[in-house]
Image 1 (cartoon, rainbow, N blue to C red):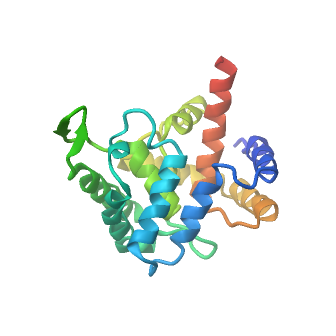
Image 2: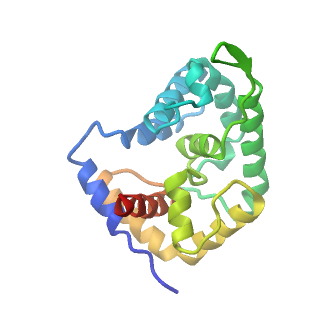
Image 3: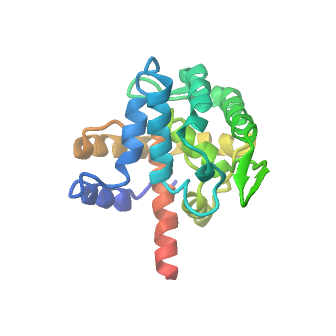
Length: 221
């Protein structure tokens, strides 16, 4: 089995050290805020909203760009209900957690679909994307990657098909996690030395494929 090459990730994190206010830190701020589930829902909703904005979820024609931060309060309440899925230095989710993770995804979908969005002078429903829902989960609980364009392109470039939210893709991710566990833990320890911050395993998987997809896009351009 091939090993993971973490050079793109490590180089990027060394660069971030030179830019203390880099947008990447928005994920760290949000994830750190959710370390204490007893914090006020409004406080957490503001952190979640700013992180999502910083990570591209308020650009263009996205539905949530037509809402204020209070749309996230219900999502915060759901995150608290599923807090047992949160990954940290003492716990990582396992394959048997997939049903609960899918339940969380579905609950978040229903929450954001429950709103009417005022777009171009008319109220309309908008189905939340896998990208939005998965970015919420990785930013708060750290228990799955964000299925955005770069992650998906990176995964496909390496021959993997876990590019959306469903049972089969999540099972594939857990197989990948187990197969490359040694490499991921080594990367985790290296980043701990660089950032003094513990990154959950699925955040590292997200980082790995995101950087692969980003590199592909840069090569095209």
